[in-house]
Each structure stands twice: as C-alpha cells, then as structure tokens.
Length: 276
Image (cartoon, rainbow, N blue to C red):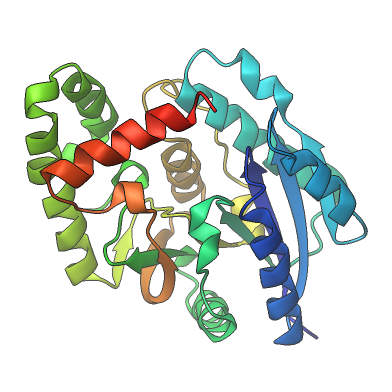
C-alpha cells in the first residue's frame, strides 16, 4: 500500500507559487506516495482562487476561508483558518495515514525531497513517542514564533516582544540581531531536536494524533496557532515532536539574518507591495 498524505494549506495571493505546489504533489505521486490536498482560500486578489478551482478534483479541494476576515488580529485569523481546514478534513473523513501542514508562499519554492518526506514518515512509524516531524530550513531555521523547546523559554512572549519592538524603529534592527537572528542560528546548529511545538513552513503529523488537537485557544490573540495545536496534541497524547535535520525547506528571504540596509529595504519593499 502506498503511503497516503493529506495536505492542509491556507492560500492567499499565492498565484506565483501555487503551481509549484501542484507540481510537488505530482513529484510525490511519482515517488510512490498517494496525495490529496484541501486548500483554504481567503480573498486573494491575484487569481489564486481561480488556479485552485482549475486544479480541483478528486485529489484537490477548495475550501472557502473568508470567515477569517472576521478575526480581530492576524493570529486569531490564522487560528480560524487552520481550524477550518482541520474541521473540513474531519468532515470529509480522513483516510490518509499522515497530515502535512504546509505554507504555499515562497516556502514551497524549494520543498523537501520525496526521499526526505519518506524518511520523516519512517521516523513517525518507528517512534511511538512523537506525533509529528517538522522541517528545518536553509540557511537557518526561521520560525521562532511556532517554536516551544527546552532552553528557549523567552519564546513564549516573542510575539508581544516583536510587536513592542516595532514601536521603536531605532532599535528594531538590534532587537532582531539579539533576539531573532542569534537564536535562529543556535536552533540550526542544535538539530535534530525534540520539542513541544514547531512548524517552520512544513510539518508532517500522524493523522490520528493531529485530529486530537485544536488551533483555537483562549490565548490565540497572543500565541501562534501552531503552538496552540501542538501543545494541545501533546497534552492529550503525552508525545513530543521532532525537528528533522533532513526535512529541509528554503527559508523565506524576509525571515533570515541580514545586514542593516537589507533589513530595512526588505521591509520597505514588502510594505510597498501591499499597495500594488
């Protein structure tokens, strides 16, 4: 029997990258996997919904996630969208062995190879003490907001610290140097590692464990939705997750360590792109 994976993804303004995701599913199928995907689309302005509708069929389903617009903050909106995907998967009936949660923006430009995905599957099959295997990234592990691991206790308040740091432009770059960049490099050197939570753009779950969790939480306005899910799974199962050294994606350019001038030019370009 081929290994079956259900991909759950949110997509907004991903017209440039979502064709790469469809091609990636084909690569995995050619490597012996059986793949399906549910893609939640939320008010894209670049033709993303049309691309999903054109690809829709027995293996790819479109989920309308415009309900996210009612969320009062970005983190709440993301929790709402991810939970809608989880609920849709359960309503559809999950026959797949594994769930893969993946970002469809620039993360999917260079996704993990089929052999790396197979190795992650084999890791989950061999070790009953872990519920998921998360990706690392090059040149550094980038997603500190979703991370909960022993020795990095400051992470529980990182979202608030980033929000506060944005109010001090003169020290905002230094904040990234001392609190973001240094810890991204440390995490990359320390892998593989067991943790309570991670995402980093690509994460493979045992389907039976994934369905025991929830993205919604009382503190969802302040905490990354992946943290809420992973901690809830850990509480129910007593298991942890592993960040693999071999399951590798490309870190988004706006999340990796850069110098002062690149730091600010990236942010200016990103802000201007919102007005196109």
